[in-house]
Image (cartoon, rainbow, N blue to C red):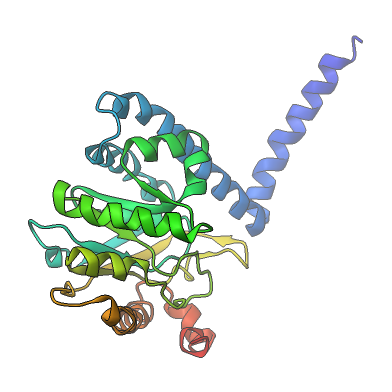
Length: 284
């Protein structure tokens, strides 16, 4: 039994040696370390935010607290976020934001440009994500169960009323899931039905491809730049549910055009798209 302290010391020394060695010699290990810290740090920040947010209870104003606590994360990873077109946000009315969805790193771009009184619509599973789920609930994040269509439609109807009565904006990822392929998936129509039902404008937001500095398939995560482009609002006044398919296609087309432009101008994803021969177009 006297040997145990010595064994633990040796194991600790080996660990202290192996971790730096893996960090400098293995890009895959560096990827996993960075993602583990990213997720762990967000959970830790949520723990700090919960007591502050709990003072108000569930309130969309708590999103300001979460945004303030998350803004610094991009500096930890050497990611420069450039925002253009922020003047397109309607100054004093509800609206629906639609944005492309690439990975959990979207959170960095979202926090950079998140307008006042704006909350995301998220899958219900996030509610059970420990401290992050509770912090999101306190900040007024709207959770929907995508597997139960009836419940999702009911929630969307309630959201439409909330938009108008409480001056709230909502942020939706109409692709419905993360897309790591440097392109843009077909849009689901829930966000557009919501905007038409409430007769509020749609504000498209496009984040450039992360492929220059992040690729889940290649286990690569370095520093880099991302451009966030806010497009002019798309009015929905006078539109009916019958107009939703054409509306969704029109918004997606405009967003995809901008995505290709800002992902090939040297500000995010350009090298990847050039090497792949325009994978964004090939997958449509």
